[in-house]
Length: 241
Image 1 (tube, one colour):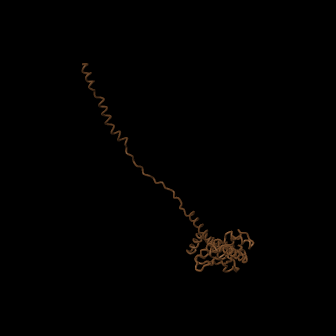
Image 2 (cartoon, rainbow, N blue to C red):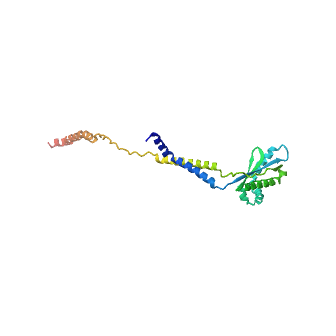
Image 3 (tube, rainbow, N blue to C red):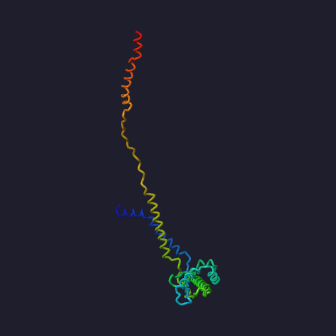
């Protein structure tokens, strides 16, 4: 077998999880983009105008505050009655966005059709203007509609390119995880059987023999001492004479 073919086989055995998972993930993303229901978005703009000239910083601060109130019940209740939706449904479809350096509020409405998105955004913007202007004497600012929402030309979701890219990235991640799992499971070294080597016998010192040799003179001296007559025995023998 030639070297290029061998290298190709080695790469195929190593990288097949990624090569399989990336196309499958991209295909899944394309399938989602084909079957997912479309969603449209429209933007309506409201500007905060100070009643006293030179208070632009105050207008920016109130724009930040009213932008947070765009999704609150006191604003959504009137807008829900105008659009024919419930307040909870409208809360999921509309949100407000503000700028840190401009007294402008962007109201974004979403819907299953371009007309639904426009109606949701304009209804919440109109309700927010009415709610804020009811207390304009106390706040010193007024809300003025800047631009109504326009019908979008195409849906914001699903996006075929984005969904295919996300699916391919997910497939790449899954394939890499499978590769790591296979490498950990199959790369463990096999246990090597321990070979018992013969151990040379170490001669032990003949301790008992040495002890016996040391004890032999002691036994001879004891025997000699036992054969010698004691002084008492000698005296007894002399008296008998």
